[in-house]
Amino acid sequence: MILYKLSNYFTVTIILSFFSFNVYSQDTNPVQAWEIYMTPDANHNYIKEYLGKWNVQASMTMEEGQAPQVTPLTAEITEIMDGRFFEIKLEGIMQEFEIKTLMTLGFNTSSGKAELTEITNLGTGMLLMSGEWSRPAELLVLKGEMKNPVADNYIHIEKEFEFLGPNQFVIRNYDSSENADRMLTIEYIFTRSN
Image (cartoon, rainbow, N blue to C red; front, side, top):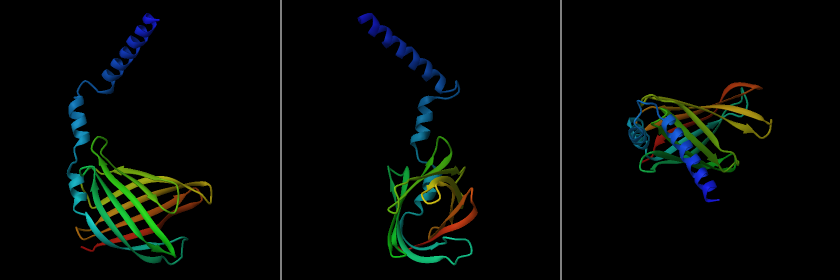
């Protein structure tokens, strides 16, 4: 029994050693790779300019050709996890429904991609998005998909962040699916309130 346990221990050790040697190329220093991954960079500093409280004009279009429904919302953007991520909280009343949306935005210094999660009180699904952002720029485009509970298909979502300066930015959602062409469905215009 002891020999069996020892042989299992050595087998696992050999497998883990093999894996650890193959995870990193010969040119990659694992310590430096983790330091890069753990350290916020210029993209994080760029987003920090947008911390604070915001007044938001939300325009929602449900069908092509329909006039958008415009609703005032409020938002607050805070940094979390020592500036590695940013939380965007949106609240208000839209079409007699209380709206609460929570987004977490980050920049993955290892992959070079911006990443976002979004949840809302109007559903149980979570939207996961990512997009290239090689340097801080005025336009950030993220892509993801979510299940359409009505049509039982997937909606492809493209979310644009357009940074217009430290006192204003815009988020636009474009939706498309196998049954529908790309359409602007939601536009949030953020104007600094403090």
